[in-house]
Image (cartoon, rainbow, N blue to C red):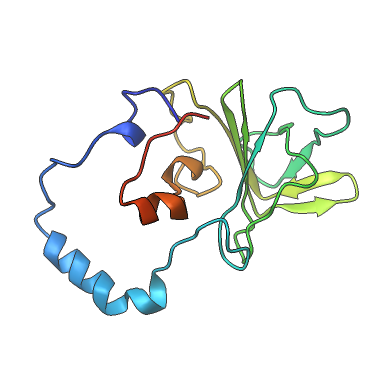
Length: 165
């Protein structure tokens, strides 16, 4: 995802450790059982699933979203059967294959007319362009969620691969 020179694709294997690295790791080890867990999409009770879809949607599959924030009014091509993250954040993440568009919603729920969401963001996965200053995204920091998700298979294999949309 994203161009090879994007920050998401930087190899950090030989990067210097943060001076507080040992403290951070110790804190996570001491408190991680209660506050830190993987959000693998396979576990629908707390995971963040990602839907990949063909570049040309089926007729009637695109729905306008009623967003409570000003950032982007839509429409977002999110299929009605897109999985919603369990829990309070209710993220919906959709990658449109072929066009390399990423659509992420926060506080999403299905309505009789399609979808409604608290916020939404579109990312062009072929570009390093940032969102305008002050604009949030589905994670509130203006960053995409999807590139930061790690798959269970990657952890089990011992390495995380960059992948294209």
